[in-house]
Image 1 (cartoon, helix red, strand yellow):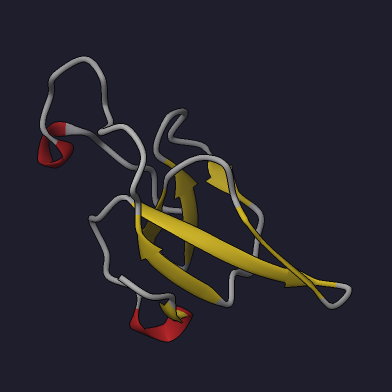
Image 2 (tube, rainbow, N blue to C red):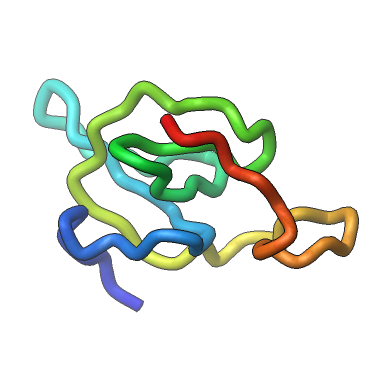
Length: 78
């Protein structure tokens, strides 16, 4: 899937998010989830203080590795 505008990012999905800072675009190295009005790190469940501009579905390893479904995980409202 190609990169999509951030306003189209779904909730409750592991996503790769991209950020543009100082004219440089990069993707975060860990999966994120849209949570409330912000973003949460899928691995740590902590708030991620970023303002991404684009997203795509996470292509890396499936999380969480403990075998619980994503629906069983609790993501803090950030």
